[in-house]
Each structure stands twice: as structure tokens, then as C-alpha cells.
Length: 418
Image 1 (cartoon, one colour):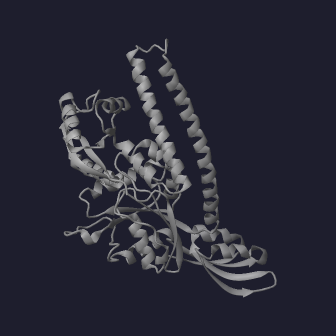
Image 2 (cartoon, one colour; image 1 turned 180 degrees about the vertical axis):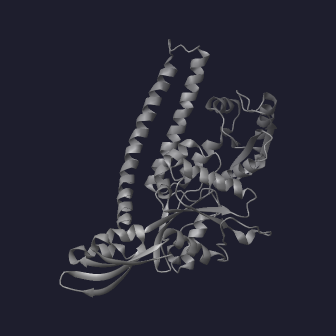
Image 3 (spheres, one colour; image 1 turned 90 degrees about the vertical axis):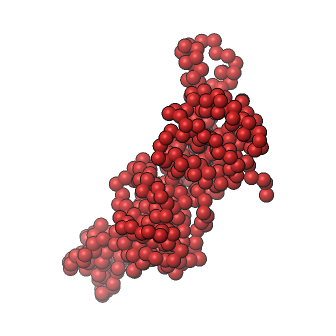
């Protein structure tokens, strides 16, 4: 196994309450990237230095620190302009990265499926493109806005820019082909009228653990998903069929979020996040033992809004309750994936939200429409009452939106069950 990269975290303190959280989160991001944090250096300031991030004296201190600790990388815990990163890389031996570049590095390591790999490459290229555009704008400003007398270097940069844009377009075409196949599978699921719930939440809140706990609780543990105590352990969406109280639903495990998730990552992962955007219910998982669980819960909700899932019903779940010493009244369901506490309540609530009020309808279904009954059996309760030469008499019960497709063959609607 290759030795871990030795990293120094560089942090600009703005005097905010969440500063300490950002340092700790960046430390965890380094761990997820397989690096070891050997030192932390910070400077209190109202804003980053426009040329080098840190002021000149602190930059000299950072260079000395890199030499003494034999650092391989310097990671700034915030995002810096590309020109600043470029300038710092010419001033010191270790590679200098900002937070977005670090997250992209992790995503590149984690991508397993063809879809995830395409999304990561698109995000990386878009980040490179935005870096180019930022530097080009800075150079234009230095020339007073003139576009004349471009040098050979700038012409090469323009060529690279065009090549990068072309590569992004090609990758997006490949991604669309995969997405179209995924949409076909999704259409088949819709035809089976089975409801869908998506587990969303801050990274490392225990989403995959919750999915596995539900699988274990419902007796289908052999279909467990991989789980790790690490940021961004899950990049590809996993889906499992769950049966509870004679009802079935699909449960999706999605990629986690972090504060200030780079725009190009959210945009590139829209295909993966479509599982959440197309769900009938969002299960927002929060680590109840995290002092900042309220803020992280809101970050997840804001991201859902960003991908067009803001109007989907949300069930709040407070995970890792076994680690909480002083419990409080949570506005949701408290669970422990370790002990199983709260899982019965959670599954009941999911089922009630996915299948709220029920309609019971007696129908006479012609034999040439019997296939509709087969497609509905995962979601509806169907009882055969009788048969004749033209079809079957059945009693169908389930959610009104699903039962109504049988209305053309209705004999009578008996009652509504709450």
C-alpha cells in the first residue's frame, strides 16, 4: 500500500461560529482521500488575501512548516481563486489544493460505476474550465480589457479551452445514453406503480447504515450495501425493494452532501440525484450525535431545493441515537441502526406516508386487461371474488391515485379507509 500523503491544512479564520466545524470537516475530507493531516496553520482575517490567500508573513511561515513537516500537500479549507492557487504552487514545493479540488479528488477515487466516473470527469473538467475563465478574465483586466496582440501562450490556452468544452459535450452525450437506460428502468418501475422513498442527508450521517438496518429488520440482509465511517463513502445510488405491512416500496440510498457543495458537483450529479428528485418521499437522515445536526439538516433541505426536489414530502430521521447522552424532543423519528431502536416506528411511518388513504373498489376486469392486475400486486391488495366468460370480479384496495386506473371497470366503490 502506498504511503499516505502528508497534508497541512491551511485555514482562514473569519471569526464565525462554524469555523471549527469547517476545519474538522476538512480533516475528515483528507481522511476520506487517504491522506494524513500532519499540521494545521491558520490566519485570522476578514477576507482572503487577493494574491496569496494568506498574507505574506503567514505564507513564509507556511513554507517553513512544509519543509519541517515534510508535507506533500497543502489543503486550504475554503475555495480560493484559481490564480491564487496557481501562484502558491509556484512559491512552495508541496502541491496546493483548495476544498473543491480535494472533493473532486475524493470523488475520482470513489467512482465505481460508468455513470459515476462520467459525472466526476465532467465536474472536474467544468472546474478546470471555470479556472481558465477566471484566469483569462484576470489577464484581460490587467491588459485594460484589450483583446489585441495575444501571445502564443494565450492562443494555446484558447485551444485547450475549446478542447475541454468539446470533451465535456462528448461525456454528456455518453451520460445521457446511460440516463436514458436508467429512465427506461424507472418507467418500468412506474408501470408497476410501486412507491419510492429516497434516503438523503449530510455525508456520513448513516444513510447506508440505515438502509442496511431496514434490510436486516425486514429479513433481507443478504442484499446489504457497503458502508464506511467516512465522508462520501457512497457515490452511486443503490436501490432495494422493501416489504412492510403487506406493502412494497423501493428504498434508494443516495450520495451525501456537505456544506458549500461545489456547484459543478451538484450539477454533474443531477443524474444520480434524480433518484431523490423523482421520489415520492424523502427520508432526511441526520446524525443526532453531531453538535451541528440542525445546520446539516438544513443544508440537505437546501440541496434538495436546488435539484428540484423541494416539494416532495420529507420524513426527518435522527440517527445514531444510541450515541446521544442527553436526548431531546426531536421533530421526527429517532433511530439507532446499531440497536434497532425506532425502526418499527420508522417503517410504519414510511408506509403510511407512501400509502396514505385507501379506496376499496369492486371491479369486473376483462380477461384482455388481466395484466394490469399483475402490475398492481406489489402496491394494491387484490382479491378475486368470481369469474365469468368475459372476465374476473375482483376487490381492489389501495391508494386512490393507483386504484383509479381501474375505474373504467368499476362496479361500485365501497368505502374509503383512513
